[in-house]
Image 1 (cartoon, one colour):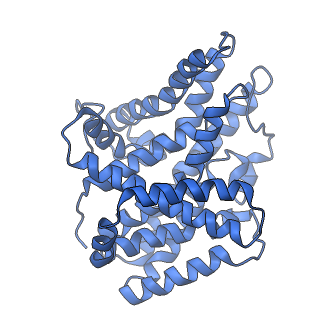
Image 2 (cartoon, rainbow, N blue to C red):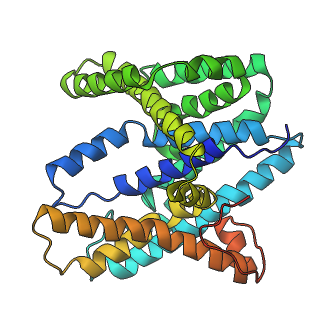
Image 3 (cartoon, rainbow, N blue to C red):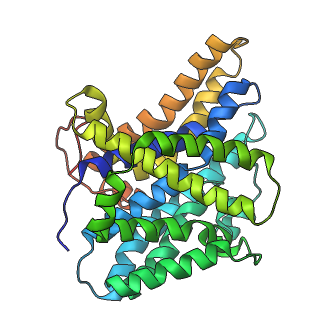
Amino acid sequence: MASKRIYFIDIARAISIVLIVIYHYQPDDSPSWYLLFNEVIRSFRLPLLLFVSGYIYWITRKPIAYKDFVRKKFQRLMIPYFFVSVLVITLKLFAQGNLQVDEPVDLSAFYQMFYLPIVSGFFLWFIYALFLIFLIMPFFNSRNKLLLLLGLSLILYFIPVPFTNLFALLNLKLIFCYFVLGCVICEYNEIRQKLSRIHVLPVLVFFAIGFVLREQIDFAVVVPVLTFLLALCGIYLVAHFARFLEQKTIKIRTVLLGMAGCTYTIYLFHTTFEGFAKALLQFLPFNNSSLFIMKAFIVISAGIVTPIILQKLIGRYSKILSFLIGVNFSGNKKENLLKPSK
C-alpha cells in the first residue's frame, strides 16, 4: 500500500505522546486534581499510541522480504533501545549518589536490558514489545488473517493466565490488541464510516461512568473489560478531537503536526530531560497549586521540546547519532523545528 499521510492520525499521535509525557511526571507533591487527571489519561494513553502505530503501519506497509523488514525494524527500534538503555543506566549510576533518581540501578542492568527491558528505564519496555509485534505482523497481511489476529490478540488480552516480565511478554499481552485494532480500522472503511456517526457525548458519558465504576469494582472479570472499554472510548475521543483540529487552520494544529514526526525521539528521551528539569527545580519552593502548575509546565515542556530540538540537531549534523536514535539524517539543512515532517 502506498504511503499516505493522514493528518488526523498524526495529530492523534502527537496528542498521545504529550499525554505520555504528562503521565510520567508525578512528583510526591502532586495535588489531588493532577493525580486524578493522570489516572484518567492512564486509561488510554498507551492504547492510543498503539492504535495510531497500527494504523500507520497498515497504511504504509509495502511488499518487502521478511528479513529486510525485520532488519529495518531492528535498526529503527532496537538500536535506539540499546543505545538509550546504556545511556540511561550510565546516567543513573553517576547521578544516584548525588541526586534523587527514580528506579535506581546497578551494574547488572547492562546485561539485564537484553531480556528485562524495564530494568534500564520503566518506559523502554514499550519499544521492546513493539518490536515483537512487528515480528508477528507480516504473517497476517490480508483481511481475513488480520481479523483472525484481532481475535487471537483479544483472547490473549483477556485470558487469565499469568505472563512473565521477561522479554516484555506481559506487556505484549496487554497492548497487542490495540495495535491490531488500529490495523483493522485502517483496513475497513465501512467501520470508520459507522464510527464517524457516533456522537461524542454518549462516549464521553460512558467513559466517565466506566472510570468511576472501575475505581470502585474489584471483580477480576469486570475490571479487564472496563479497562478495555475505557481505552476504546479514549481512543475514539482523541480521534474525534484530532478530526476537529484537522479541519482548523490554527496554531495548535501546526504544532501537533510538527511534533508528530518527533514522537519516537520524545518517547526515548522525555524522562531524561524531565529528570534534568526536576533536578534543577528541586531546591525551589513550590508550595501551592499555582506554583505546582508552573513547575509541571516547565518539566513537561522540557520533556517535549528538548527532544524535538535534539532530533533536529542530530538529524542535521550527526549521521552516527541519527542512526543510534533512529532518525533520518538530513544533512546540514536549515529547518523549522516545528515544521511538519513528511
